[in-house]
Structures are given as structure tokens and as C-alpha cells.
Length: 390
Ligand code: RFL
Ligand code: PHB
Image (tube, rainbow, N blue to C red):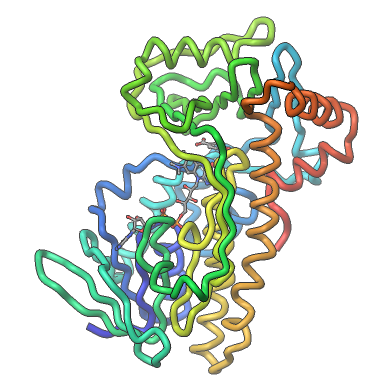
């Protein structure tokens, strides 16, 4: 099989790229190791920045997003008995975020690709890549029990942190940066109406908790937990106990319970591979960078990479210009490192660190105070949360 652009991975990055290339008249094939059912039901991110929403709307993907997405105008920070609302409207001149599950973005993209008869192969696992420096790189994959090959003009690694494309770049040529955190997040999806209109990020004596949502009838809650914990370590009773203790710290606020319909533990790390191009192989999204979820930036950075990559490939196919392909890593990395900094900042502000001296907690308190009285500091948080301008 041959195509112009071979894309590995049907997450937000791979599917959006394929969709945008199709609109520019460029042919692509997406290879995804999981089933369609699996990728459409994998619960992950929930927050879209304004710029991500704008891109999805421009790309004709706004029908359900406009109907079902929930526009939010602020977030609440809760520090024990004190709470402070970051008001996006006044601090960012009316920008905001939209709460719309990543799995809904995925469903919209798959429907659009299928409507356009796009080539999207599920249960097609890429095993290796070769000829990355030639004009016809090749992808080797397994599909329906057979070993197949796809030759293409560009090969795009959108296969997430654990994929095969980044390791195809020799280690000696990869410029990588990493930080691990001494905790993980336990996330639960709950069949219960959200208990607040906006997201609540709580720094409590027992550790971090987040109250979020997916729809008017589905809540999404997270708890900081030790990094080695397994999901079996957390009974429903223990989860609810911890959520009530960490979130119900202000008067007259109660967390609604309901059946837990999905649960999982996510490790927390910051990671950037600055080598986003290697010959005809380009990396995008989680394949190139990971952020801890505290800043809600992961899916948005994947979308941001694709904005640059689709423009670069379109320019190359339209008039043979390599300029945007050459500047692709540096164009992406400006936003990636801003997102890395913000996600690290939010993580440092809100989690409980093992710190006998109390130094980190004093810093957190000082920063929370500052956010409460300084509109300059609150503006910086709001501006990053809704997403910096392109
Ligand atoms: P994905 O979504 O991981 O997609 C990669 C795809 O590649 C496939 N794949 C392969 N296919 C073929 N052959 C192989 N050898 C393959 N190896 C892998 C995989 O099956 C998969 O389908 O990467 P992409 O497209 O870069 O998208 C990144 C986002 O998914 C990720 O950054 C976000 O989910 C992160 N994230 C959040 N981001 C936000 O912007 N806002 C949020 O509120 C937010 N909350 C979150 C999050 C991630 C979380 N978890 C579970 C990691 C909350 C959580 C709990
Ligand atoms: C979510 O709703 O899944 C979510 C929201 C905000 C975050 C992380 C996750 O910072």
C-alpha cells in the first residue's frame, strides 16, 4: 500500500491531522493498534482551550461540540477552608474553556474521517519503521494476522508516549528532558450531576483533589495517590471518603455521590523530546511530550502541534516549500514549554509533597495568597489556563 502521509495512532493528534490534510487535498492513512470501540470509549482529557475549540470549529467539527460542550468562565482554587475563583471573563477579555470529553472529540473525528471515506485502519499495530531518511519511508504493521507494509512520503508519529515512532530516532540524536513526580492521580467517572458549575482544584491537608465533569449528568473526580498504588487498593468507600475529606472543606458545599462507572490510575510526569523531526519522520502530541494533567494541557498541546504540522505539510505539497517543515519543532516547542511550565506550576501549587519541614506548603500558601490579592498573578494563571495565543 502507498499513501502521501502515513500516520501512526488514532488519538486526537493522528485523527485531526488526517482530517485537516484531507481538507487540503492530501491523502493519508491512519494505523491504530486498538479497536474503534476502545479508542472511542477511553476516558481521558476533558478541557478544551479556546484556541483548540476555534480550530475544531474552523475544521467543520463543531456540530456536537457547540451543542454539548459546556462553556466555563472560571475555575475555583480551594485551599482548606479558603477558596478563590479565577474569573476568566474579566482576566482574559472574555476567553474561556469548553468542557467536552476527549472521547467525544475522537468520536467526531472518526465520524468525519469515515464520512469522507478516509483510510483509517483499527487493530493495525505498527511494529517498525525504516528508510526514514529516504523519500519513501516505510511502516511495517500487523493487521488481521498478516504482516503488511505502507510506504509513504512522510511518516507521522502520533502514537503517544509508549509508541514505536520516537524510539525509531536513535537515542544519541534525541534531545530529551524529564521530571517525575512522587504521586499519581486516581480518576473516577461518576453517574451523578456535577456538584458545582465550574471545576474545583483543591489543595487539602490529605492531598490534592479535583472535581470536574463530562456532562450535566456525569461527574469526573480525581485524587492524588501514592505512585505505586493499584486500583484494587482503593475500595469505593475509601475513594468517597477521600473525596469528601479533601473537597468538602468550605461551608455548605457537598459532593454528590453516584455509581462509579470507570476508574484508573495515571502516573504523573513531565517529558519533552525536542527532536520532533528526523528525516521524513515527524512526531506530534504525546509521542513528543507529556505534561502532568493538572494544567489540562495534554490534548490541547496535541492539537496545537497538529495546527503547525498540517500547515507545514500543506505548504510542502502546495508549493514544495520546506520552510514550515524546518521550523516545525521550534514552532511547537514554544507552546510546549509554556504548557510544561504551567503544568509543573499547577502541580507544584496544588499537591501535597513529602516535606517534613513544611517549606513547600508555606510556598504554596504564599502563592495562593498572592493569587487572591494580585490581579497580575491571577491574570497569569487565567491566561495560561485558557491557552496562550497562537
Ligand atoms: P494518544 O491519545 O495517546 O493516542 C495515541 C494513539 O496511538 C496508538 N498507538 C499505536 N497505534 C498503532 N501502532 C502502534 N505501535 C501504536 N502505539 C500506540 C494508541 O493506541 C493511541 O490510540 O496521543 P495524542 O493523540 O498525542 O493525544 C494526547 C492526549 O490523549 C493526552 O495528552 C491527553 O489525554 C492528556 N490529558 C489531558 N489533556 C488535556 O488537554 N486536558 C485535560 O483535561 C487532560 N486530562 C489527560 C487528562 C490525560 C489523562 N490520562 C489518562 C493520561 C486526564 C487524564 C487522566
Ligand atoms: C478532566 O475533566 O478530566 C480534567 C479536568 C481538568 C484537569 C485534568 C482533567 O486539569
